[in-house]
Image 1 (cartoon, rainbow, N blue to C red):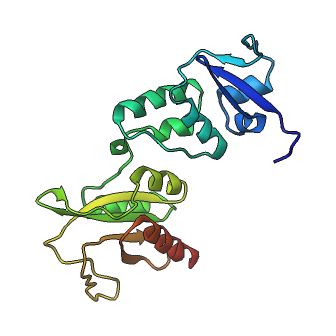
Image 2: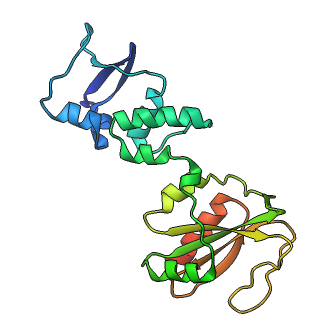
Image 3: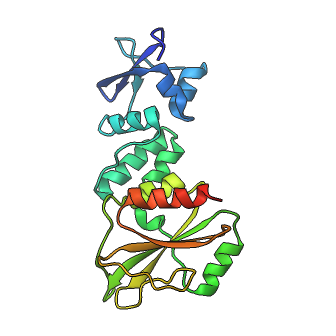
Length: 218
């Protein structure tokens, strides 16, 4: 960071925040327009840009503008409140991050539908099989943040989730050998690549690494 970088002060609903000018212009949206154009700007008595919004989620918004990621609230109510702020600041990607996870998870109803999905895209298609028993999810991999995983990979992958009943046989690999595992693990399959694969994973880092290794071999 250059030491000649300009510091900008913002008064958001009575709370003052300070950040680099480059942070505010990094993302397209409200602040980039505010800083880089000649639109009339209201300032307070301390020469801070005055933004007539609640400061409750502004630290979260500011963290997003710094790095493109941020920690989202746990509750649906707070997530929707943050979404309203993201909409005001015209941060489209943050708005998408605030969408309920149920609106992001995609499934398919039959093998025929999966075939249509594979045929309709040039991207690798990843199908994640999750374990169920009596219609309940019985195991969730460690560190598995669904929304973060989908957002991180959606530009490069088509991601779908499908249930796998634990009473059924484990997936069979492409050599027709039964894959056995002593502990409950989710599995994934990748299609639309030269050598389709199937494997198990126990946490998000191992899933991300295995998918990366497969795609790097293409």
